[in-house]
Length: 68
Picture 1 (cartoon, rainbow, N blue to C red):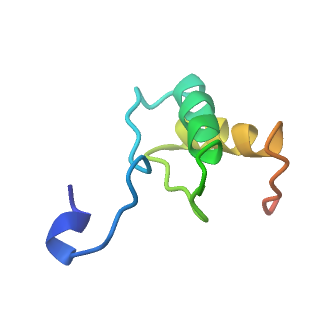
Picture 2: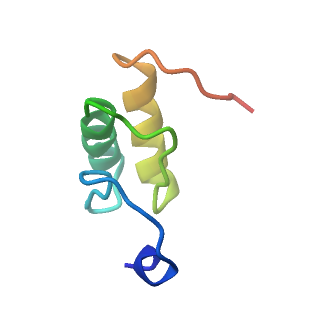
Picture 3: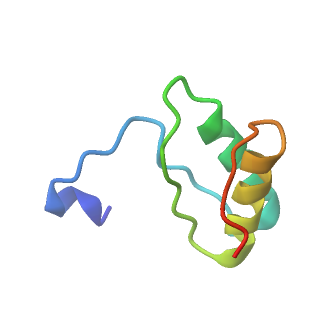
């Protein structure tokens, strides 16, 4: 993992794996947001995954994000 040599701390459960799809972004994004301490930011590996994460944040989680 690229952050390990840099010594960056990663909270348990914040790293998720998927198949770079909208569906996986939706599933894994929802799982991240359901954690007791959800992350304050999410990095997605590609656009399709990012769109799924955005939808997970918008729908039941009620999070806001910039539209521009």
